[in-house]
Amino acid sequence: MIVADIEATGLDPRKHSILSIGAVELEHPERQFYGECRMWEGASIMSDALEVNGFTRQECTDPRKHSLEELMQEFLHWINQCEEKTLAGHNVSFDRDFMNDSFARAHMGWHFPYRTLDLHTMAYMDATKRGIPIPHKNERTDLSLDAILVYIGLPEEPKPHIGINGARYEAEAFSRLLYGKNLLPEFEKYSINHPA
Image (tube, rainbow, N blue to C red; front, side):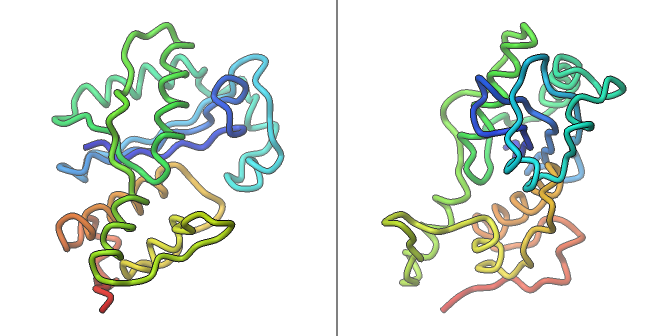
């Protein structure tokens, strides 16, 4: 399984651009990917998105960075070495749609299928099975990544969001929810939380 997290200039893959991709192969967690690129020519920038991911407008357009096409080629090379290519993550449809749009922009035929594994769903099922109430806000579940991390015994993800940090935290969360065990050495010091 490929646990991936992207950072972008906004929320719409048709108008906004990927800025970075982080990924961890769950079955071989020592295999990790991180890459950054400048935004594609003509992409829009949402100030709110940059506040979340910490990129500056100058970094978004830095000509010294890889182009989107170069980043997607490097990422595809990494993907092709993974045993199992099911995409996983928190709010994974967001990441999948951006990556698929970016593969298309790079004129690459490869894409992630619609079948994915979402961390929100996993945490929802785990809490429901344990009889723990699911937090709600605005008539929807309110299981942010940080809430899930705390639920399983990890600290909140450091800010600003960085693609590789997101992928590592999410991979650790999947391991704890799926297998009840630690995955990455940097998280060994945090006990696995098994809420009553």
